[in-house]
Image (cartoon, rainbow, N blue to C red; front, top):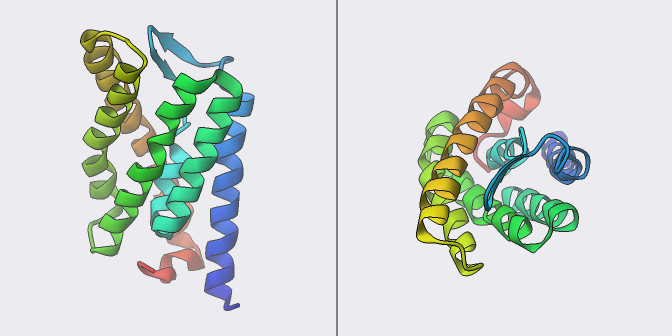
Length: 168
């Protein structure tokens, strides 16, 4: 295995671990609940950073987030977190097509908010709760976590050999 592949595998494994740890340590403790919407600080950051490592890694990190939230906060929040799987994979595909990291994160934000709102509808919540509370809440949460991910990317990722990985 080449050094760049080892770095990518290690980075992906660390992001997966963090995506499992955030719900385990923070969910329910520092979570902001508003009706069917919950926001755990920085919970999207591992998935958002994983888009830099490719669609497979992004999907696996998103799955880790879903498992962590399902175990800690139950099926509604776990299924909402499962939306991180396609959102991360699509973000990674945008990166592969040459879209910049910041632009790709903001491009997937409406998809993320829409998918989480659809999950809540399936659980019988009103259109108002799904669209306004969860949809807008997720959009805001995604943007805040995107800013955190972009700051981490600028400080850490761009200053390591990972920056040379390209868009594998």
